[in-house]
Image (cartoon, rainbow over the protein chains, first blue to last red):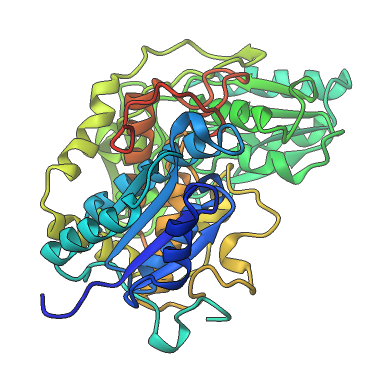
Length: 146
Length: 317
């Protein structure tokens, strides 16, 4: 694939404990990665993922805290159930499940997110652009009053 | 097939004794192929009660359309009783305010299959005791095998008997085979990604967005559906490919751990779109991963309402 894949990163605002990492995500994220910051992975409705997919995302990454370390106790394990099932379900109808990835970050982790994003991008580049599910009309990307 | 007179007598009894304010059942519809849901408020009205294999609606749908203070009697089959249990769990009606008249169900006949097999106007349909159906059509009588007429969901039914009904009228039937239910899901999952997607597109993109499936589903009771939201607009609202696919994807996903595989959505669809291959996959996953089946009682929380650290899944580290 010649062009760079379009990725969406759903990031739990508590999972990047190192200020340098958060700074990098906030300001230096590559242009092909769209950032959606959420208060907790438990806040991610599967509709958000569908919105990303229908907006033309080739891959979606969700980064959250380790299971026992959720800021809100159980948000991430609730999200894990739903999003895992949702990606499985999208796989059932033609959106490869490898395109949706859940990244668990430890409080001690430093510089992991950059590596993981690069690895994910390489994986999606190998898969090629997502072409199966229909995308919204271009001018309506963003989901407002489509 | 339960004795219709016993059914009527029970409905009359609970109405006249004041145990319920209303009984939800079926009455004869405009054509013999479509008995329609009916709401009986007095014992006299109950004479119109009809019950046969062509009663295709899931009556639990109407539960959420009455105030919670109303005492409701309802004729329930296996799938309906499970839907009622799920609705009771979700707090849509107190169980004390319900009186369930259970009828074991040996399958709902898909009226489209009768029309397909006879190919002409149908005047009457009579079920016979030897598992055949006598159909009176324009050019004469047809005797059809009931097996071949059953709706797909009913042919694979696991729980034909009403669960937690207050009274059961008719003889209990043997339980279905769960393996039969997963067969179809496994067959679909065995196809290649492109084939699965081609099937999904072919089905979803015939949609005319009438939302009959939503209205027919007992679990679709949201005050405002996600497709009716203006801001943010979750998915395109017209019959565009993205809109139609988005509707079908999310409608089914919202039923995860709630769908009883009654197939009312499919029977309600005017475009004859197949939808149960989506919900059954989700049901099958719930059964396999969390050992959960919908509506077996009114107290077990569905998997998405509970959390545990011990899940075994792709996302687990």
